Length: 403
Image 1 (cartoon, one colour):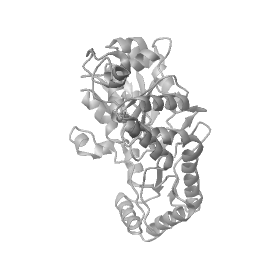
Image 2: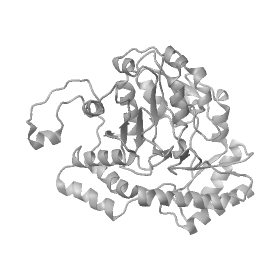
Image 3: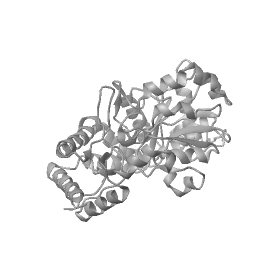
Image 4: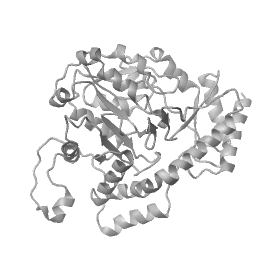
């Protein structure tokens, strides 16, 4: 049996939506993107969401809007994908890494000691779709000691008056914290619609606006993001086609980060059925894994729900108790030989050349390394039936027993 790791969910509804975009003659940013933005906003309980061409672009654009630049610091987890750090570096700022907790997410108790007067933002990451403890983080950035340390250097920083919470929610569309959807907890949250995500547009992302409304007009912020993501151009192609006139201006040195309609069509069809079909099916697979591995003392199951939150079930990060990194790699080889494609989420950033050469050391992040060294990401997606799930579980068990 051959089981891929994360194939896209493409059904007849997706094909019809894409064909509708093709038949319309409109494939760049247009009505499908606007519809997708409104649907994401509706499902997260927000008034404004702006789509872009990737979550990476969204994170960088939001930090840029907040005035993050050279000399600034942004706190991030050491255990995340490289993009979380690269967006900070692209703006000339410094990523300040913090170790993980046992749930893979950033250890909020360790953040305070890394805050300085140069700290402008914190980027919590919902690893595998498991929400961070956002209320604890909100309490931290609003505490008098931390607010008094904040040194604003831009208009938006002065208006907010504290460290920005920019949620890297690339994994957590559909997750819930304190009965509120992820997307409505950080000042901004960014979802990823990359090909392997729960909802995909092949490539794409969405920027969720959740700033304090007494200080910021969300409609104006949304318009700014749409403007800046299209080279700072005052009219897009759709508005010109709809009679707004051909003449435009460039009023900001912006970026090319817009999402095209041909991509938005895929996500639009998926997102319509995500809460009622695709997300419950991912939960079904996660529960089947929990049942299958529950009787093995060596299998450390990932958190999926507690009194505060519920995961989006994006990744199933199974950890193996008391094994080495090399033994984990051997298990992966044997699971792969059985026809099951698995992965690892993630290599902690200090292990990667670009960060290691800049002085980050993995020994400073022991929990992140332990999570990484013992973790195997198992396939989790709606197309997995019970026979395939049983086959995956058996492949993992056989791989462990063969060590």
